[in-house]
Image 1 (cartoon, rainbow, N blue to C red):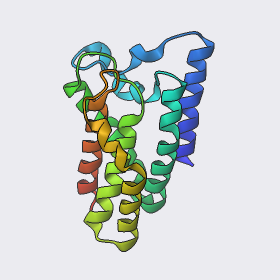
Image 2 (image 1 turned 180 degrees about the vertical axis):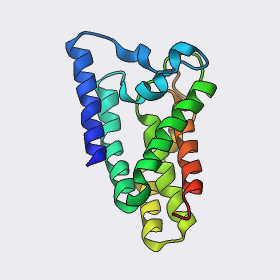
Image 3 (image 1 turned 60 degrees about the horizontal axis):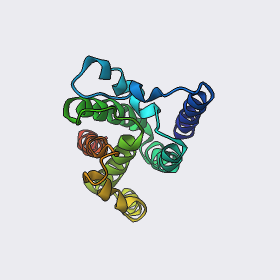
Image 4 (image 1 turned 30 degrees about the horizontal axis):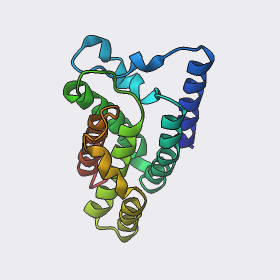
Length: 172
């Protein structure tokens, strides 16, 4: 339920932005400047366009459902950790400019689901790890600075946050 509600919230925000004829992108993370600190919380909720939001919606639901189904006792903590940690790392390590979108969460969720299954040596969870690689293995290209309009740093820091939380909760 939570991943679906989160995606609905993202669409409501985008529709409000369109209806108000506003640009919310300045609410994103702006690295190393105080004006960018609120973006740690707000940035993942803002998207550059309908295509950007549509591209993030299905992976957020699928990967989010994976976390909430297979890791129910720790799911909220995992999501909260990835959300905050990736945003903070982006604030410290991103290039100048506003960084928006939930792609960092997608990278964090994918990294967590992949690595956690391997670390736990649980057959069911390892199967999920393989499924994540099969469905989202192409995400690796988003870690490279190929397109100057894409926050590859957000992807990288999201992935790092997912790896860290997989190690932190490997025994739970």
